[in-house]
Length: 213
Image (cartoon, rainbow, N blue to C red; front, side, top):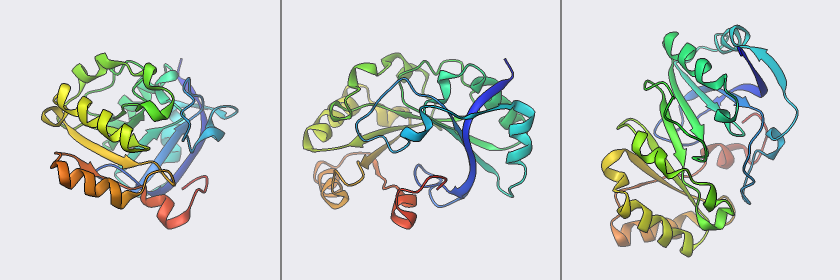
């Protein structure tokens, strides 16, 4: 299988993670087995257009950037995502994969920066977490918690310590857009002296909830 169903390929500023603010090409794959209550990309659940891997690489090359993010939906739901990631790395790009954490990441090219979302209780999909993924985290990877309320925060804090996540890779705490106040979350992090990075979704503060941003 050397083709993938894509919702869009677009050029924007990275809105999250450690490369926030850097011009990046986003390759958004279609389809996701999860239905998180705060999902902002439900338009990627269905539809899409089939692309050969060579055609995806050709589209990416149109933009003058070193950074590519493969996202979704859930990219790993399509088997050809793995060879796409490897092809992008082979081309010299710094590649990140945004994944829900529900599917196995063991076979992802080790050059890829895995951004693994650990679903909190308020997401509605906490039972989908594939906890074995923690064993496959590398120092350059990142773990993300989307925090919806104080109960989510306390739960995430427990998981952080229980699995010693900050010793494995960078940990990101992100307030759920329009559900969790970013300043309040920042205060909790400082109060508890957590070894995490607060992030907001830069693209939403710049452009709101607009597709292709």
